[in-house]
Image 1 (spheres, one colour):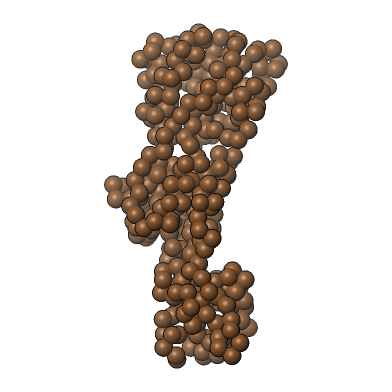
Image 2: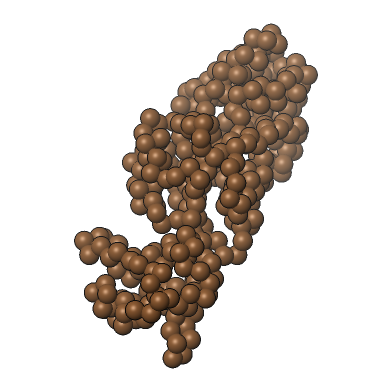
Length: 335
């Protein structure tokens, strides 16, 4: 084997459900991501790969063709295959796909260098799905950006990834002091946003927080809502049964669910109530459409664009990252 080829070693698992060509693709991609293979390095020839790892020529050709299509390698006639770029793969694990997560995603990928490929997967708050995603991804990616959730097995699942390669985003739950993170504050920052709107809330006789039982929004937001109402002497209710959501005049509603926002607007139309005058609404999480819905929906939200930008910076800079993205109040006609 030529000296250049000795940089790359590969373990083939003949019992794995992963096709052998994909194992070879992953092996070379990971070697590039880890700087074991660098731009200009010569790869083992097809014959060498076949002989060393007991693979067919078709398998090796298929793997090399995929890598060429990804611009990871190039072939030079009569010389062989070379690493053409320092391609790096990143795993982005989100909870669910919603409009504001799309903002985060596009901000993240648009701030990454061209040589970084992002794989996106969703756990849907299912711990078995989460474990499978993490277990299947260990060792295959340059870095990992993970939106976790409240489950006791999260820490153990993530322990397989070294701290310098892992970034936790969005919610400070099941994290430890050594983790890199970019979080939003669902407690004090939310409370302070409510204070900014206190004069608007005074227009209404009561505040209702709609926290439906199907939501996965952090419960601490409800706790700080109750604290705000107590501190500023507001009458209030917390509604957890979405079926009991029935709007009343002179009540302002706060909701973490866009589904509830839809019900609110439907009931306003049915009962001939004017948002911002007869009833109020404050929605959690900004989306591109909320400034256009009705005459504009007031929101309290973190900056998902900034969250994505800071997560991308973790990928491009080998630096520890521990920060919170601000939460802001945006007043529109609905309040």
